[in-house]
Amino acid sequence: MKITAIECHVLVVPNLRQDATSSSQDNIVVLVHTDEGITGVGETDTGPWIAKAVIESPGSHTMAMGMKDLLIGQDPLDTAALWDRLYTYTCMSGRRGAVICAMGAIDMALWDIKGKYLNQPIYKLLGGAHKPTITPYASLQPDGGSVKKYRDGLVAWAKKAKRAGFLAGKMECTLSGPFNHAGLQGSDEQATEIVTACREAVGKDFTLMVDVQYLWRDAKSCLRTVSKWDHLDIFFLETPLLTDNLEGYATLAREAPMRIAAGEWLNTRHEFRELMDVGLVDVAQPDIGRVGGFTEAMRVCHMAEDRGRLIVPHCWKTGIGIAASAHMAFAVPHCPFIEYLPAQLSDSDLRRDLCDDGLVFQDGVLLPPTRPGLGVELNKDALKKYKAKPLLL
Ligand SMILES: [Mg+2]
Image (cartoon, rainbow, N blue to C red; front, side):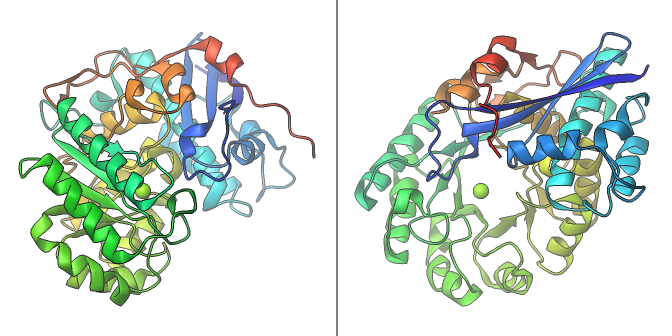
């Protein structure tokens, strides 16, 4: 089998809000075609125009080759060898950042091809299921233009998630900092009130995580607040500090009363090694597209397992990435939750329309995917409906 063509689709919701912190508004869907008539699909969570340029740009010399040129004519089943080929011959422009994100979408598509070719779901090819079910957590989406509305919206979402059968939920509580919700300005004391209100709304028998989206600049400011959250039984605190403040993360990992989670933006196992060995985080959160695809995500999983840490993958795109997260979660023993928002609960039309993820959610858990490959059925009409207008450069 040989790779014959690669298509990149840049998609954007019609009501795009550039001031919103929500990457479910855009996407790049990558289709890898073969001479056997099998097509693989992948996506990645980064600037979609950038990823498209990375994949389609021609190369100029052996250290800055074009990704498409490196793939055409190759056997798509050679996933690890192709990962190495792409990494090595894009090294001058790549090694991290958008190049690795783009590689992630391609690697995801190659594994989809492999599963379809061998007529097996991907988790089987990754080593098989370690458990009969996996547990998704609902990402609770805030709303409202004031702190009170934001709190009421989160509490309503928490109750809605519980009613929908979820056993776990993650509340985004971002009242200030670089990614504060729609210009809100709230205090750390108000954040504590919101987390408390959500815990009271869902009761004891519900796993609650908190994402503050890089809120604090230093570990002591964070500890001043989160040390008061011990009795609220927070499963993990996500991205309390800027990504590269590894010393700060290490302080939190030692002193905070809950697990510290991070890693959603990281590329390759090399960045995760630093996060785990210098930053000492308890929960590594690879996003399969961004970390470099299944090939690299599984390496991160093995590194975390060796160090006694947990994996809880980040995923905020569409059913393509969510299906990828599910396959990986089945294939490792130390992944207690995946991020998962059922399409019908999402506020993104693109998320709802793009594909059927093939996942079955019942009694708060997800069953193993049954279709070959990723098991995703793409809605080709959505590729046309959400096609981004060409950029005027
Ligand atoms: Mg997050």
